[in-house]
Image 1 (cartoon, rainbow, N blue to C red):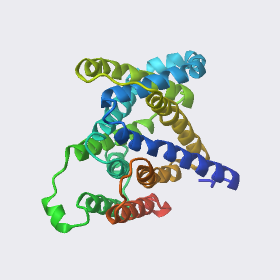
Image 2: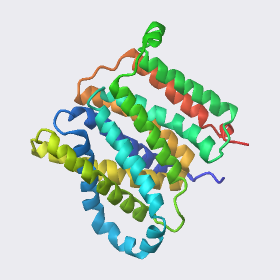
Image 3: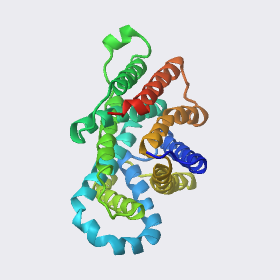
Image 4: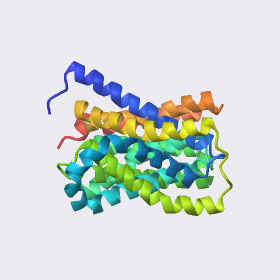
Length: 304
């Protein structure tokens, strides 16, 4: 595979880092406004606002590609269902039961592990020795985090409700990643994102209506509206466009590595915004996981 030129490399790396910075804030928001907006409502407002924002820019392109989209409607349904309905809802539900730091560490580091396993099962991608070593180091890092660095804690450990939610969400994001690799040819990135967002918002609507009838009313203010706008424009549109553009410039494997910066960004943001404490266990587990992911993505790890 031809290596990217220096200009494309710098642009691609910058776009990938920008996407991870934008996405990392999502975990802080999930925790920070958990007492102000119910999780399913927050997820619906995020994707409904994204639908409204992207519609004027993507609708014309959608009309040109609609026959191909309708032909693959089951595929788009599966992609939106796994990522928007399941993964993102679980992130916001988990935000009611665990810290932003743990959301980022458990969520974004366990998802690549699930992706490696699912790729081997469904895409028949071979798992080479270096990839297995990286996987084991990642698992060690996550176990170290969940045990708080104590073997005795590990023996007595029981998953909390928040841990189960974010771990389940990570699995569905891995499933989404597998599905994206099989995107139908002829569908542009803008139309893919448009249909993905629109379908997801539609799926969330019944859940929002149900939650609206059972949850306490939302006290809207300017700050909360700004958060929803950030989620709709930033995490749902700009970050995805940056990520896709980075893949075109530096490749999917190299771009994927930058996703593992999210725990570090989220931890720093949580420290600033939520006054959460970064402990030694977070640093050590983060180093272990990132080291494992780097090893798992070395060139020799994917060679036949």
